[in-house]
Image (cartoon, rainbow, N blue to C red; front, side):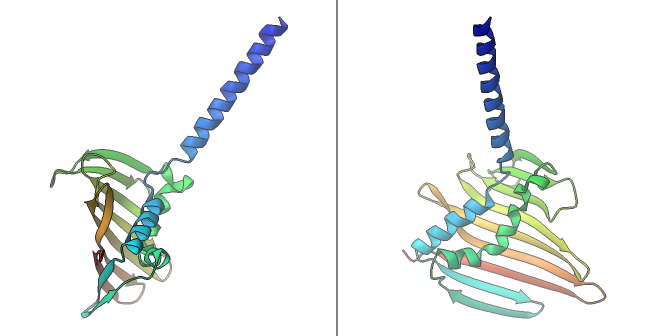
Length: 198
């Protein structure tokens, strides 16, 4: 009898341990690891001394510069606007997004589509890839921001090319508009083209 109670106790302990591990894993799931992607790109671009051709447009004014960020921290700062997309992974938000996978109607790529079912800053995040998610080709997202002073909408795009076994960022763009309450609207755009010097 004691032996059966002891066995039941051990089984119960293992069942609790397994359930707590699986719930911890589910809790840690990410819809898309934006932060890891940006860190990996920053390291790669820094190591390969990438040159950035950056163009900006605000209304009718345009500007263009060539820069070489000095290290991975500088590259991470350059790409930090895309870090806002990681909001889809916050525990409070994850359940408010619908995840679908489907073929892209305009290319031979597959799409991992993350779409908001609520009024969240990231309305959608689409990840385009060839055959497997490791062969990343493009990320596209809409980011909205609204407060008592302004309403802003931005479409963020990153394009990648396969270099060896890794996807490498080749260009990005931010197209947006901002409407000030009781004021004018502003339309702007930022684009970057990257060239590896090594």
